Length: 404
Image (cartoon, rainbow, N blue to C red; front, side):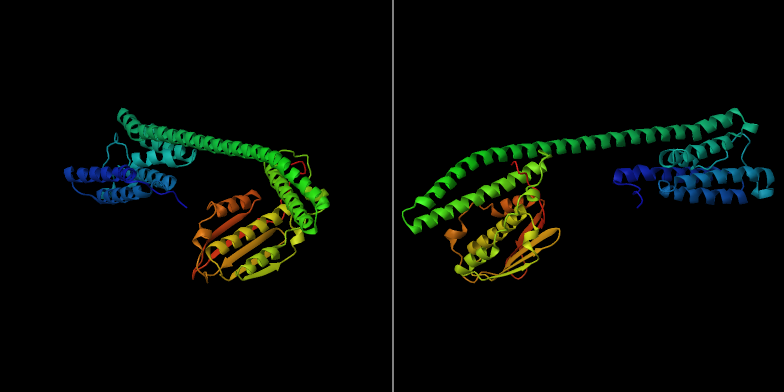
């Protein structure tokens, strides 16, 4: 795709200005020329106006138009020697035989043409105009003013643009590097905070698990022992989830590169059962159609827990904001990714304002961050015809650190 000829009204004005100047000079010369019109004069006028019009595309075809200008000047010189009558140019021997638009094409060749071809064409035109085999002071001065000077200006503009582009690229590269450094600093701080949280929470939850385990053994009745065992199991699951999340953070930050992923040397952790969440929702009047495709055992524990949280948060929001809405949950376990789609219709019962206004309101935002933490994506929003849909795509495997 070609670069646009101009990108603003100001650039368009200065880009088209040479065309107006060339046309004005040619028209003025024709008005003040009192000599008899000749066939060559008519041909020269036509060629001048055509080449002035082609100045519009000089940025796209600088080499071609410069070569055409060179060929026309050479043709004028040839006609001076071979033509007779009205076809013979009436230039003086001391006049530069070149088009009025030639200086503009020289400038364009130095700015837009190739680094070698442009100067070569300009040098050839300078040699042709100065006619070293029959030169004069007027020819040399005309060549300097009409060819060499525009070429030097074009060379300066080209060098200036190259320098500006190099400085712009360097500034953009420095900005990208600064952004990457800031991202790395945030990631390091996030890992540090996660590890501190892991240490504090693990200590407290471990004490809770130990006390619950002791109560499960020494409890006065079966009901107490069963409740204590449930607390102990829940505490163990919380510790496992915390270890998985911190392990993912450590792995993303590049720390502990020598550690092996937990799933490579430990037995794979069981993927949480989604049917439990379905039963909970159906028990409060939210019908859920659950369909599982693929083998959940092929996914890593961190991904399984994340998928569980996506479904859990989605069903919780449905119970709050769309009570009684028929819901469809689709989970597909593929070879390299896991896709979850939770879609509900419109509510069939009135919304409990007290329940719907509870919570921080950042559930989906936190859920999206959790999904992105394991390298996945999550989209959520209303659907046509009423209802809401949550769509999450997770990688099938995410390594976590044993030492987290």
